[in-house]
Structures are given as structure tokens and as C-alpha cells.
Length: 282
Image (cartoon, rainbow, N blue to C red):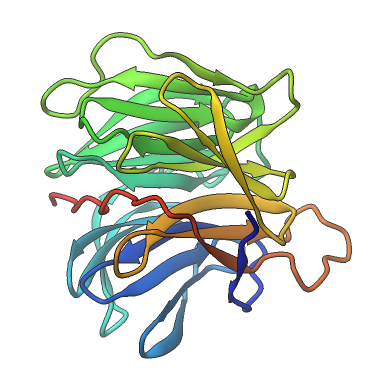
């Protein structure tokens, strides 16, 4: 299966696609370009920032939570204004936010990393009802943050490790016991980037450098792949009116003289229904 171009505005580092069902609109970030972009029934829009933003979560029809290199923010879609909810490594200019997603309980998970991908200086946090708590530390490139339909299972990865971890959760969405390896991609030389879990509990992983998204069963076996035009596929998200469209961001980063296919957003009708994105409980 091959995806086609959904939006042809190139991003240096496209990330964090998020489908807004109330607005029937896809939002995504160009981290290095310091932009938030969107495309929906009313056309395309973008917002320029003065810092690196990377991921977002739904709050309501007019509001997103968005993560930057210094904090988590309440963002008004209509006015483009934002209000700081809490700092996020604001005292560490060497780091920025990266992958993030909301869980079933309304918590927002967000990874941080070095701006030069310095070894082991990143972490994964969870923001829940006003509290920000560090969950994982010693990470280099946090990615693949996503959640199974049961609400009691999280996934995450350090891309450099090439392993996606599975983390049990308690009823409030906090980690319960240790994480264990779910998918080891070292033998195949694959680099796990962003991921999302569909309504059947299968994990879809964008694989940096492989120009594809791969679907894995709950037992870790490969089910299928979707090819995208951009070499660095960075993150998938389900959207569309019936949540059967798979959107995929890509990046130009670390590609000398990138061609016209790099850094675009792609879409494919995959015949599988995604989960509706959870709302963040501020």
C-alpha cells in the first residue's frame, strides 16, 4: 500500500499529527521551522512561533494543549494565543520537546531530548490534572508514545535503542510495574519514530529512514506496511470522518539536497479504524 500527498508544504522536521474530530482538521508541527500547520475543510493554515513546538493534544473544539521546548501551553485555535500551563525543562536550553500523545485517562505524555540528540539527556513526562511528573529518564530520542484501546497499556521508545517498550498502566494511567520490550527492530536495522494504536490494538510505527509505516499485531508480528514518499517518515495519526485515513508526517532533516517528496504530509485509506484521540484533562 502506498500513501499519497495530503499537504505539499515541506517541513524540515514534520511531527505530531493530530486529527481534530470536532473541526475535521489535521494539525501537525514543523519542529525546526517553529510552526504549527493545519488542513481541513476550510483549507490550510499555519501559525509561526518563536520556539520549537512538537506535539499536541485535544482539549475542546477551540483549544489544544501544545508542547514547546520550555513548557506546556493552552492554545486558542481561533486567536492563535497561548497560555502557559506548566514549565517543561524551561531551565535546560539544551533540550526541546519531541513526541507526545494523550492517554485514555486524559493525561498527556511528552518526551524531551537534546537539540543535538545528545546521548541520554532526554526524558518522558506525564501531565495529568495540573501535575507534571517524570516517568522515564536517560532517553536520547523519545518516540512511539501511544496507547492501547484497553487504557491500561502504553508504548514508548528511544529511537536510538531501536526497541519499542510496552508499559502497563494503573486505573489512573500511571505506570504500574516495569516496561518490557514489545518490538526489537535492531536485527532489521529499523528506527522506530512516532506511533499510534488502532481500534483493534495494532500498533502503527513510522520508521525513520525507511519511507514507511509498519503495522504490528499485539504479539509483535508484522501485519503490513504503508509506503510514503518521504524517506524520513516521522509520525502517523488516524483521522477522517470515519477514522480510516492514516496521515503520516515526514522530514527533510539530515537529507542533503532534499527532493520535492521530502517533508510533506501523506495520507492513505487503510481500511482499518483508528482510535478517536483522547481529550486532555487540564
